[in-house]
Image (cartoon, rainbow, N blue to C red; front, side, top):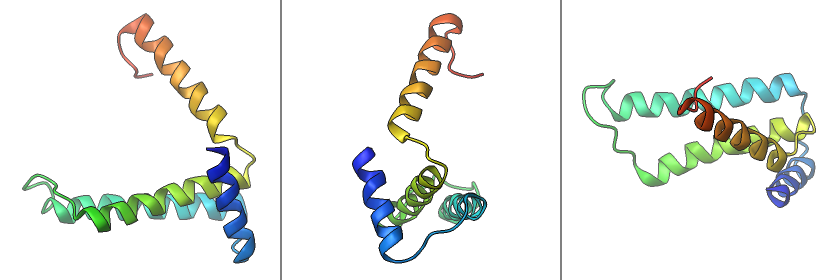
Length: 102
């Protein structure tokens, strides 16, 4: 994950796409909204099962991932450490409550 964060950082720097964390968060929310809209449209607003066009779906999910990595980079979050911390938290919850929910 650290290599991916460096690669995204290099891309952002090379193309002068730096911005503040607030803008990064808004971009992430916007991208997640696009994913949600694709699910709504692809399921005829819940009237049928969602069956995504794999290529377009991968692109939309990729946009979300890119935005999340940019947000992490702009706030100095090591995604490897963050993910391990979350997995440990969920493991503890499942062990104690048989459920990953908070």
